[in-house]
Amino acid sequence: MTTSWVWISFVLAITSTAYGQRPISVWLQSTRTTNWGDWAEEAICPNGTFVTGFRTKNQPDQGIFVDDTAMNAVELACKGPEGPATYIKSGEALHGNWGSFYECLAPARGTGYQMRSEGVTLDNTAANNIALYCDGSRMEGYGNTWGDWTERLNCPTGTLLCGYKAQIAVQLPSAIDDTGLNNLDMACCLESS
Ligand SMILES: [Ca+2]
Ligand SMILES: [Ca+2]
Image 1 (tube, rainbow, N blue to C red):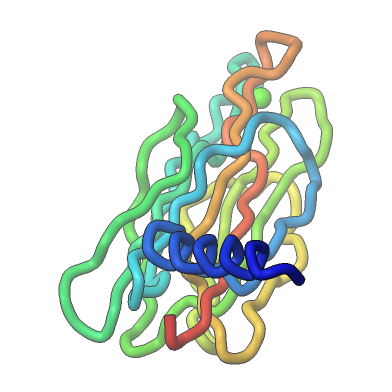
Image 2: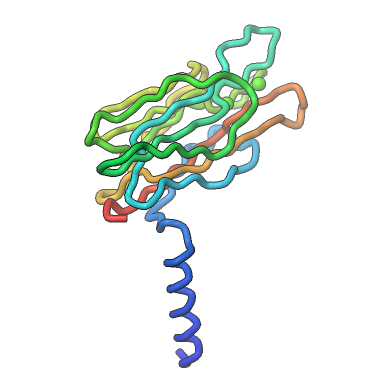
Protein backbone atom coordinates (compact mmCIF):
# COMPACT_ATOMS: atom_id res chain seq x y z
CA MET A 1 0.00 0.00 0.00
CA THR A 2 1.44 3.38 -0.98
CA THR A 3 1.51 6.33 1.37
CA SER A 4 -1.02 8.24 -0.71
CA TRP A 5 -3.45 5.29 -0.70
CA VAL A 6 -3.19 5.05 3.10
CA TRP A 7 -3.96 8.77 3.30
CA ILE A 8 -7.00 8.45 1.00
CA SER A 9 -8.33 5.53 3.09
CA PHE A 10 -7.86 7.58 6.25
CA VAL A 11 -9.79 10.54 4.82
CA LEU A 12 -12.63 8.26 3.64
CA ALA A 13 -12.87 6.68 7.09
CA ILE A 14 -13.08 10.08 8.76
CA THR A 15 -15.74 11.44 6.36
CA SER A 16 -17.90 8.31 6.58
CA THR A 17 -17.85 8.59 10.37
CA ALA A 18 -18.69 12.28 10.32
CA TYR A 19 -21.34 12.34 7.59
CA GLY A 20 -22.27 8.74 6.84
CA GLN A 21 -25.29 6.83 8.01
CA ARG A 22 -25.29 4.80 11.19
CA PRO A 23 -23.39 1.54 10.54
CA ILE A 24 -25.68 -1.40 9.71
CA SER A 25 -24.49 -4.82 10.93
CA VAL A 26 -26.81 -6.82 8.67
CA TRP A 27 -29.91 -6.41 6.48
CA LEU A 28 -32.59 -9.06 7.06
CA GLN A 29 -34.47 -9.82 3.82
CA SER A 30 -38.11 -10.84 3.72
CA THR A 31 -38.96 -13.92 1.65
CA ARG A 32 -39.65 -12.66 -1.90
CA THR A 33 -43.10 -14.23 -2.20
CA THR A 34 -43.72 -11.45 -4.75
CA ASN A 35 -41.16 -8.97 -6.04
CA TRP A 36 -43.05 -6.06 -7.62
CA GLY A 37 -42.28 -2.39 -7.24
CA ASP A 38 -39.40 -0.14 -6.31
CA TRP A 39 -37.45 0.12 -3.07
CA ALA A 40 -38.12 3.31 -1.16
CA GLU A 41 -35.33 5.17 0.61
CA GLU A 42 -34.00 3.50 3.76
CA ALA A 43 -35.37 4.81 7.07
CA ILE A 44 -32.89 4.39 9.94
CA CYS A 45 -33.42 5.13 13.66
CA PRO A 46 -31.29 7.95 15.15
CA ASN A 47 -28.05 6.88 16.87
CA GLY A 48 -28.60 5.28 20.26
CA THR A 49 -32.23 4.34 19.49
CA PHE A 50 -33.78 1.07 18.27
CA VAL A 51 -37.11 -0.14 16.91
CA THR A 52 -39.64 -0.45 19.74
CA GLY A 53 -42.96 -0.40 17.89
CA PHE A 54 -44.78 -0.23 14.58
CA ARG A 55 -48.07 0.43 12.86
CA THR A 56 -49.34 -0.57 9.44
CA LYS A 57 -51.42 1.12 6.76
CA ASN A 58 -53.80 -1.54 5.53
CA GLN A 59 -56.71 -1.73 3.13
CA PRO A 60 -59.44 -4.05 4.41
CA ASP A 61 -61.12 -6.59 2.11
CA GLN A 62 -62.78 -4.67 -0.76
CA GLY A 63 -64.98 -7.53 -1.93
CA ILE A 64 -64.77 -9.45 -5.21
CA PHE A 65 -65.53 -6.56 -7.60
CA VAL A 66 -62.92 -4.06 -6.32
CA ASP A 67 -59.10 -4.34 -6.47
CA ASP A 68 -57.45 -5.34 -3.17
CA THR A 69 -53.98 -4.28 -2.03
CA ALA A 70 -53.85 -5.23 1.71
CA MET A 71 -50.74 -3.72 3.37
CA ASN A 72 -49.64 -0.38 1.87
CA ALA A 73 -47.08 1.03 4.31
CA VAL A 74 -45.35 0.57 7.67
CA GLU A 75 -44.15 3.15 10.17
CA LEU A 76 -41.66 2.32 12.94
CA ALA A 77 -41.13 3.88 16.36
CA CYS A 78 -37.50 4.21 17.58
CA LYS A 79 -36.61 4.77 21.23
CA GLY A 80 -33.49 5.06 23.35
CA PRO A 81 -33.10 4.58 27.12
CA GLU A 82 -34.87 7.91 27.65
CA GLY A 83 -36.60 10.63 25.67
CA PRO A 84 -39.56 10.58 23.27
CA ALA A 85 -39.93 8.21 20.33
CA THR A 86 -38.81 9.10 16.81
CA TYR A 87 -41.04 7.85 13.98
CA ILE A 88 -39.52 6.71 10.69
CA LYS A 89 -41.14 5.72 7.39
CA SER A 90 -39.82 4.23 4.14
CA GLY A 91 -42.34 4.84 1.36
CA GLU A 92 -46.13 4.77 1.43
CA ALA A 93 -48.62 3.47 -1.12
CA LEU A 94 -52.03 5.02 -1.69
CA HIS A 95 -54.66 2.78 -0.23
CA GLY A 96 -55.96 1.89 3.21
CA ASN A 97 -55.86 3.48 6.62
CA TRP A 98 -53.38 3.49 9.49
CA GLY A 99 -53.95 1.05 12.36
CA SER A 100 -52.91 1.38 16.00
CA PHE A 101 -49.30 1.39 17.17
CA TYR A 102 -48.05 -1.85 18.71
CA GLU A 103 -45.24 -1.23 21.21
CA CYS A 104 -42.71 -3.56 22.84
CA LEU A 105 -43.17 -3.77 26.60
CA ALA A 106 -40.21 -1.68 27.88
CA PRO A 107 -37.35 -2.33 28.24
CA ALA A 108 -37.71 -4.93 25.45
CA ARG A 109 -36.73 -3.79 21.94
CA GLY A 110 -37.25 -5.22 18.47
CA THR A 111 -35.14 -8.28 17.74
CA GLY A 112 -36.82 -9.71 14.65
CA TYR A 113 -39.88 -9.79 12.41
CA GLN A 114 -42.07 -11.92 10.20
CA MET A 115 -44.21 -11.07 7.16
CA ARG A 116 -47.45 -12.45 5.92
CA SER A 117 -47.50 -12.46 2.10
CA GLU A 118 -49.75 -13.72 -0.65
CA GLY A 119 -48.29 -15.29 -3.80
CA VAL A 120 -49.47 -14.63 -7.36
CA THR A 121 -53.24 -14.82 -7.66
CA LEU A 122 -56.11 -13.26 -9.65
CA ASP A 123 -56.25 -10.09 -7.55
CA ASN A 124 -52.73 -9.70 -6.13
CA THR A 125 -52.18 -8.18 -2.70
CA ALA A 126 -48.53 -9.17 -1.92
CA ALA A 127 -47.72 -8.25 1.71
CA ASN A 128 -50.72 -8.56 4.06
CA ASN A 129 -49.27 -8.06 7.53
CA ILE A 130 -46.13 -7.92 9.66
CA ALA A 131 -45.32 -9.23 13.14
CA LEU A 132 -42.61 -7.71 15.34
CA TYR A 133 -40.64 -9.76 17.87
CA CYS A 134 -39.55 -7.92 21.03
CA ASP A 135 -37.15 -10.34 22.70
CA GLY A 136 -39.54 -13.27 23.29
CA SER A 137 -42.95 -11.73 22.57
CA ARG A 138 -44.63 -11.45 19.17
CA MET A 139 -47.06 -8.72 18.06
CA GLU A 140 -49.09 -8.89 14.86
CA GLY A 141 -50.06 -5.65 13.11
CA TYR A 142 -53.34 -4.48 11.63
CA GLY A 143 -53.52 -6.44 8.41
CA ASN A 144 -55.41 -8.86 6.19
CA THR A 145 -55.25 -12.65 6.26
CA TRP A 146 -54.55 -13.64 2.67
CA GLY A 147 -51.39 -15.64 2.09
CA ASP A 148 -49.18 -17.20 4.74
CA TRP A 149 -46.70 -16.19 7.40
CA THR A 150 -43.17 -16.51 6.04
CA GLU A 151 -39.91 -17.29 7.84
CA ARG A 152 -39.17 -15.50 11.12
CA LEU A 153 -36.08 -13.31 10.71
CA ASN A 154 -33.86 -12.47 13.70
CA CYS A 155 -31.07 -9.98 14.34
CA PRO A 156 -27.76 -11.66 15.28
CA THR A 157 -26.82 -11.73 18.97
CA GLY A 158 -25.61 -8.34 20.18
CA THR A 159 -27.66 -6.43 17.59
CA LEU A 160 -31.20 -4.99 17.50
CA LEU A 161 -33.58 -3.73 14.82
CA CYS A 162 -32.62 -0.17 13.86
CA GLY A 163 -34.36 0.60 10.56
CA TYR A 164 -35.91 -0.73 7.37
CA LYS A 165 -36.72 -0.20 3.72
CA ALA A 166 -39.93 -1.05 1.86
CA GLN A 167 -40.57 -2.30 -1.67
CA ILE A 168 -43.72 -0.68 -2.99
CA ALA A 169 -45.66 -1.26 -6.22
CA VAL A 170 -48.01 1.62 -6.90
CA GLN A 171 -49.45 -0.11 -9.92
CA LEU A 172 -48.77 -3.42 -11.61
CA PRO A 173 -48.32 -3.52 -15.42
CA SER A 174 -51.89 -4.75 -15.78
CA ALA A 175 -52.90 -1.24 -14.61
CA ILE A 176 -55.90 -2.46 -12.67
CA ASP A 177 -54.16 -4.64 -10.08
CA ASP A 178 -52.31 -2.74 -7.33
CA THR A 179 -50.47 -4.51 -4.51
CA GLY A 180 -49.02 -1.63 -2.47
CA LEU A 181 -46.28 -2.91 -0.18
CA ASN A 182 -44.50 -6.10 -1.34
CA ASN A 183 -41.41 -6.60 0.85
CA LEU A 184 -39.70 -5.22 3.93
CA ASP A 185 -35.99 -5.56 4.62
CA MET A 186 -34.98 -4.63 8.15
CA ALA A 187 -31.61 -3.44 9.46
CA CYS A 188 -29.83 -4.68 12.60
CA CYS A 189 -27.32 -2.42 14.42
CA LEU A 190 -24.93 -3.13 17.30
CA GLU A 191 -26.52 -2.51 20.72
CA SER A 192 -23.65 -0.09 21.39
CA SER A 193 -24.37 2.04 18.27
CA1 LIG B 1 -49.72 -5.32 -0.14
CA1 LIG C 1 -54.68 -6.17 -6.25
